[in-house]
Length: 427
Image (cartoon, rainbow, N blue to C red; front, side):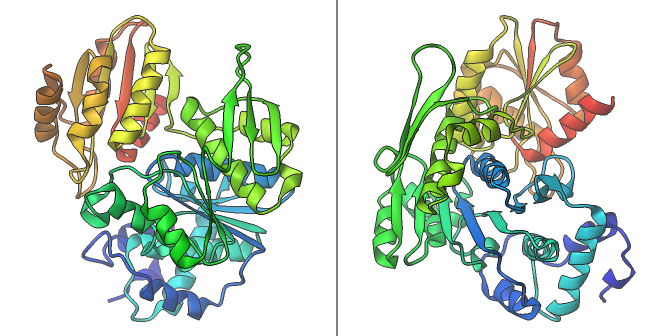
């Protein structure tokens, strides 16, 4: 029986939404299409969809910041969240309020009737209701899983971005790069531009673009970037028509963020939004950007580094960043992951960077147990791995064994980084 009519808070709604579907992930657009048709939402003047294995959240935040710099009122939808559900639904860069989200959820429930929706589908539709109610000018929508059958793909984009393709979510998308690329290429549209943000181009991407009649722009061919050689940290970007020089480095760390930024600028160039593509606008927007859980450094009793890397590609980037930021002391890693991830593939790039390991079970039905996770870590790195009974035990264990010169890395899942950040802030 529907109990949602008695829900007054977001804390009431979210647990109930998790009970709606026996499976957390059910791919397909028919259900979402039907509910959206009933809602009759007004389409904004601009929609940009973002898919890819890694870098989606960073790219979405960059697009959001750049569009806002030009005076656009933005609605940005991403997932999952780090701390609060509200982070998934941003208006002008700020999380939507509980009240606004609850109102949107109630409207979705009122019109869906007997149409079954998963937690993610329900939340995606509610986000669009929030944006519609706020009369935003632009929607920036991050695909949750794959692309072709993800709920976000029910919305027709004006342009799309595929950041990169590597192995992740293999149980749903396929166990090889080409199969995964085919799913992500599903966000392409005839006559519209898709930017591919990596020079490592699976053949499924241009093949799908040609089949659909989509325009494809590829990193290294249609746009590129170079870092200045004067150690200033500045960089330059070259697109099809425009060249930007002397750009301030994005505040988000690592060369990977230059790759993300380069692709984002190509999206804007394809949309002929030249008023945003000036050195001043780009530098101001990207150098002020913050995003939790992306190689986030917190200096306290020791140095804490929190990163949501949860697949081999992201772990390799993380390993490189750790090498650049080592303080000289020992590094202890706290790891919690979901069972459907390539755990050994995530751990292996980090083995040479970590001295001590602690495994923990994250929240959720899909979590890998700390005991099994610890065994995989120990076998992969040939080092012992301590098993923590709880998240708090893991964090306290790592901190008590670390000095000011040491580093504690927290990684493997959004479901680990969020609680760790909350613990650091409120302990």
